[in-house]
Each structure stands twice: as structure tokens, then as C-alpha cells.
Image 1 (cartoon, rainbow, N blue to C red):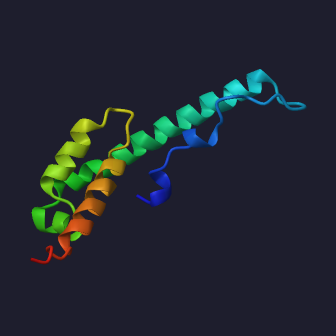
Image 2 (spheres, rainbow, N blue to C red):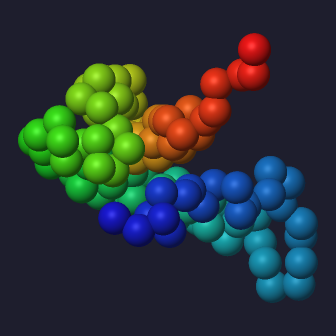
Length: 106
């Protein structure tokens, strides 16, 4: 799973449709629907790709900066059309930030 598969394209479409020459409201609506379908498909594909992570042992999960609890929480908290890889990436970043942090000076 690459990082480009984690993002959504919903941010690329503006809420207000500018009426341009040759670009009708119907074309804008079709574009929005296509973007939603593409985003849902990407989330489903990433969910399928993230599911085998739960089958890794604890040492392998620690190598990629995750714990078993992170995987369970990410798969449980994300819905069928949500992307669990975003939650997994956030958990791995948080663990990396705190893992090698120096304790405060006394």
C-alpha cells in the first residue's frame, strides 16, 4: 500500500461549481459523484490491504511501529467505507515520536 492510496480526492473538488464555458452543472455533478465513488473504492481497497496486518505477530508489528491494539482499534473504528490505513499511519507516527524521545531533564 503506497501513501498515494491513503489520501482522498474529495479535497480536490470545490464546493461551489464555477460555471465555465462548456462546463455545465450536470458535468460538475458527475465529477463529484465520480470522485466519491473513486474515494470509496480506494478506502475499500486499503481496508482489504490493511486486514492482513492483523495476522502479523507482535514482533513484526513492532518493526513497523504498531501494536496489536493499534491494528484492532483501526479496523474497529473505521467503517466499511472508511480507510483504516490513515489510523494505522497516525498510530505509527505517534509511537515513533514518543519511542525515542528523551525523558525531561530533572
